Figure 1 (spheres, rainbow, N blue to C red):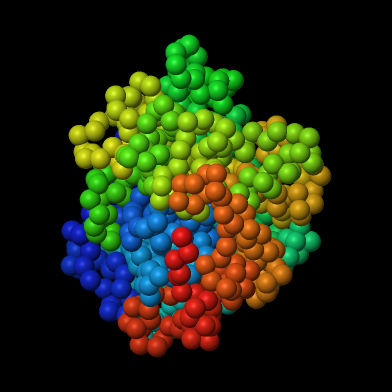
Figure 2 (cartoon, one colour):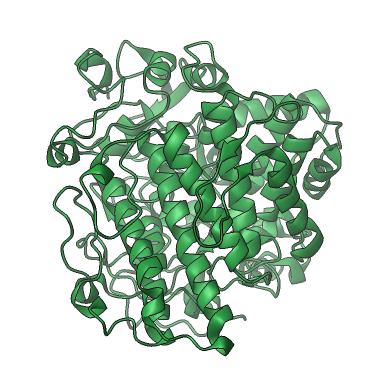
Length: 635
């Protein structure tokens, strides 16, 4: 078996390398003592800085603060119509996020701090790279490392502004008074993001990173498209991009000569990925996800008690852990990687001991039965235990089923993405304090059990070649090593269809799913993105850009969210006594979305630090009645 779990982005300890930054932003700071003329002094030092810049992604993907996973794509899942907050009665952070409310002034501060910390690390890497006396033979290495720093700065800045809107734009380690001022995302921040991605594209090698966890030229081209499409759709209200366009002026910096960026250049970059990147869709959609691993496939064919029928018809060579599949597969363009070094303890902003584990697998794990019965194989096989937060909504299941019936087909991606608890897990029972339960669970990142595992909460990873538990003190918390996909080749194909109206790219994605091929329409494209990327965190920002800023309560996004109202859910473990899902405040989802444009509140502690230079987002300020955005317990 391929040794996936031992290959990951190297992580540098922030506690030994970084010290405190400008007081105006409570973020991970720039390097100080070690940069004074001596660091970085050799290429290996820049590699270490590069690892530290990437490591913020591990904290985002594996960290756990204030009772919620740090992963912003998990947050966007719960802010969309894909997920409910769910979990136990005490799990209020996730439920308040789903209802566009807040239980405390600084509830959403962790992402703010982490993302500015990542930006600070990238800025330091950019500024100090030429402390090294690069030889002509090392110039390509220097440009690659600089390109990766620009890319990561653009990526962290994009996530920051998509979460919090207009914020200070930090492009240097020395934060001036002017830099502390909140600026327009539309007019200032996005041009910088797209300039950073452009610098990355022009500086990095035209070679695939091949699952290394690092960015390459093709990664930058794909994210240029994602960022530009959000800017054009959300801020410029370009509408259907196959028939629309928008142009921005780029910032002149190394690797980016300035000029303008419009749809034609974005399409050109995506075509370069298709024509020269060497990516291809996995033959079987299920190959992308760990539930298709060969150990579970073998159990499905061994004639013993358990057999997971959903993967029994797969080709064994297409199983998750086979060459070209799963982690490092042929359509994986960029991802967060993990390794077996996670610890149970909570603590540390930048060196959270859970950061090496894909913690989504724990949060999306099953809360089965009472009396510590979670994860018993006779009830949940082949899935393992967890917190049961962010469960898939009734809306995605119902809408998907309606689409299948109308088209007369079965989309393998539905059961490839969602667990139908009542029908797939016949013995499944609900915890007595469960609430906002839909009857479905996330399958894509669900931890997988085996009959061969020695204990109920052992993951299938414990049977992989090269696995070692010596660094783990809680396997249920730590044994989660499935890559979190940030960009797949399927997204490149669907972005191309959306930008050009050429259905042939979308048809490749449809053919892989075994659904009827359709001609281009904006609705068909929107549905295809919804099904292909279910539970991957893209839906919310897709809805936002298809709606446009300040689009009101009748927008596509607002109405999709409001359609959750009245769905029948399980509360307090009583499956037979379902209740209607209602918003926690009288405002409702549509109004909360319209009031906020989908942005979270800026942390009050950070606003205070900025001495009035940063303002609270609308919908979360004094102009909106506090009872509309204050979390209220309803279960």
